[in-house]
Image (cartoon, rainbow, N blue to C red; front, side, top):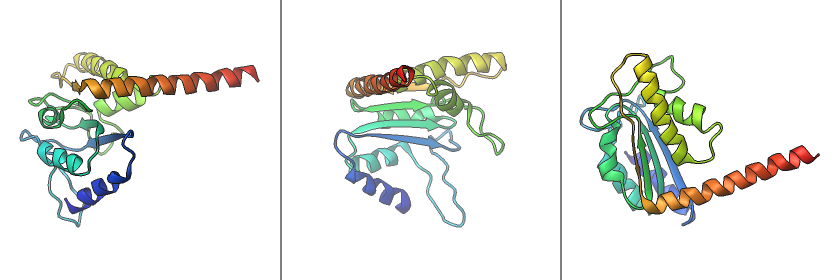
Length: 181
């Protein structure tokens, strides 16, 4: 955990208005722990409470935490607050799908990052659409629903909506300039 703690200490240098986006993908347990393996180092699994403590100690105000793991919904209660978005690949009592040595993404990671954020300016909208897409895919593949979860604090929602608007303006402005050449 020392390596993770040092990484979060480095985050103390980010500006107050910056948003930390933390994507965690690993194997999750029914006890809501993320497996952390990096041989030959002996590392501790990450619990929701430990992650919350690390973020609080680093004084990171604006947080987007995306957890792609089985039983990852168990992270929401400990991490949720007004300034945090928590998106998980599964409910606290469900497994998620798509992990493996031959997979580039889990189902959740693919739906959010590859499929939705490729054309969506809003992270909130991307996660909401990914949840729908995953439900349809699981139904089509006849597997038990993982029920991805989303918790959005009111302050981070306002902040992310503002940032999405800025990105949209920059992107659309760039496209307009290219078209006029």
